[in-house]
Image 1 (cartoon, one colour):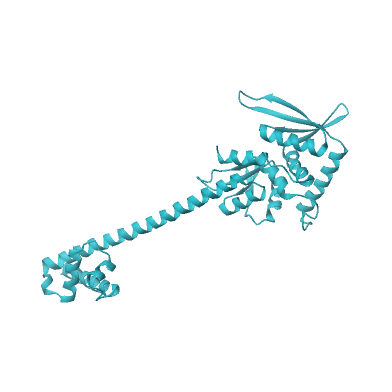
Image 2 (image 1 turned 120 degrees about the horizontal axis):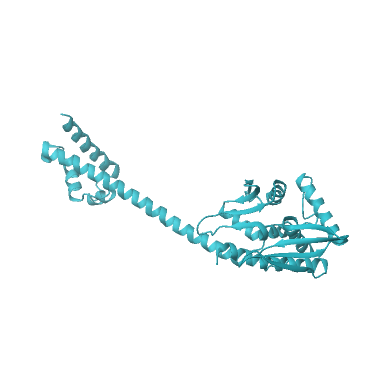
Length: 307
């Protein structure tokens, strides 16, 4: 199962703890997918959805909050796709809930409210509903990317302001004719999923992150070791070339005994590291001392080439 569907299916099965959570999760459904229709002196609330699991969640919330059984109509869009419309009467109780919500909405957008909890608004429940409807998350094995699609800039800013309190580093911007609130950091995505109540998918997400971290660490160590090995080999090849020049032009017997000793050891162990060569000297010379002698050999060979 794709990680995206794993998260959505788990969210759709979460049962809100109290009336405020149920109300504010449903408000996200109404805000993003709802419409109020008046016909024949009757006003109805319509919520249009395409996911059966999300439709069941919306139906349950309406039933528990408004104490009614809404009507659900299904229409085929194609062979494997359907559109579901949940229809319920728009009564005084609904009107009061929407009025209270838009008061919170206005205060938050104007930044005149200190705590949404003090206003009786359940932020994480609303965000859970928003993500259920318009959220998307990439498979963490490939990349860290979470987006929430909003119908307009105002709604995008509202969602962004809700998230600001949690310091999750979300960003907002236009996308085609709509707006996106998005996140690209693994730690922040983890915290957001925890905020909206995901548990099993969160454990799976964290397991993938841990495995990726181990693989990345191993790759970095291997790359570092390979780079060091290449450096040792390239240096050794160049040193052997310079030693060969000295040997052919003047002979190793005609140079300083200390330099001749280092040159002979390099020929005996052509691809040894400096540390390994120091060990062959029984630690009678340091790495810096050995490096200094090899550099002297190189300079001597360069002088012979220039003659």
